Length: 461
Image 1 (cartoon, one colour):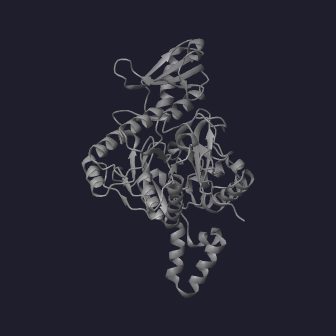
Image 2: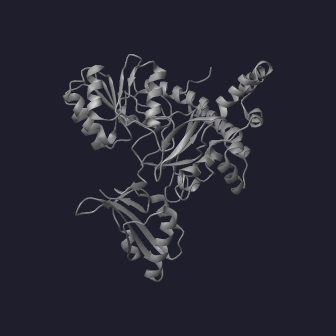
Image 3: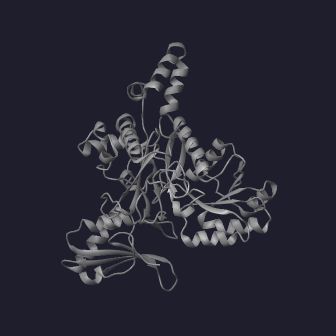
């Protein structure tokens, strides 16, 4: 008997993902993505050679700046699969192709409709780190979003009897779409009145929710307002949308006052079209539960891009999707732990789980809206022969707490030339300069202390 999506043992999970990776690259990404068609050729490989999770790991991870170096959202169209009727006939799954061919005998329009359902981008969500860009989905992709939404509802311990109030800003984002599809697929009522506090309080009075979903950064404000307005009488679950830090979770619990509600988190990495969730039984300790038949989740060293087992940047490969092709996609999220595929201590599901996740930790956005990608900074430094060592230190200024990024350099030769060259490379790759570039001796640079993100990127509180 086939295993359920959340009950695979290690062997069956490996076989499933190997098969799905091969199908995705051979029949979707390789033939129909302009970017990946070119990129695989540059790497000297073919779609048929990428037939397992192990071979997938040989492809260098890619992010938005790799696709569109100048930050132009239009450049991301190179990821959208561009299929044709001929391409569908060559690469569609057997059942889908046979159904389409039967329809073609009697109704050409119905045949075309089947093809478009599988191949035509119809819906877009906005995402991004350094810049905002659209990710496309076909009609069939939305079925996957709905299916994983129903699973998310189960992981969270919710049922059709729950009622959701979402304090999300109006907009076509992964979080908004995925939550609405999760409620719809589960048969649960849901209200999306926007993120104005007055509207949320009024909605909670009109239809007291059992589930409140709020972005991490605004959760305390929203929870406090709804509690003060008396709209929390049925509330039993708070969903923090994003990957909250411990202090943010604690603040949300405190804002609930005496309300007996569980605080759980849901999160969509950059580029994702589905939401991960924490199970009700284990909560934070169980980590974010992923969907092994819909995605492959791997870790890399943010500095070198090499595969990493014990922590690193999360890279995501989406399986079965036919809109935008996100293969080995760099999310900017980092974790200090391993991806754990053992049985969850709470719900007992055997799906890959991620704990201690830090959202968008590798990209900083200043108050004026400029984004600095620390991966680009590291890439600029790692290739320079005139540097003996270097560190990127991120932290708040002492006088006002405003975030700053200081690059410490230990040159092998002339310090002035090294600083000028490093600055030029950083501007080219990252599009913006750090706060400061400082020259020091090798032992001084190596001795810089902070919470390590990678060996040379340090975070300070």
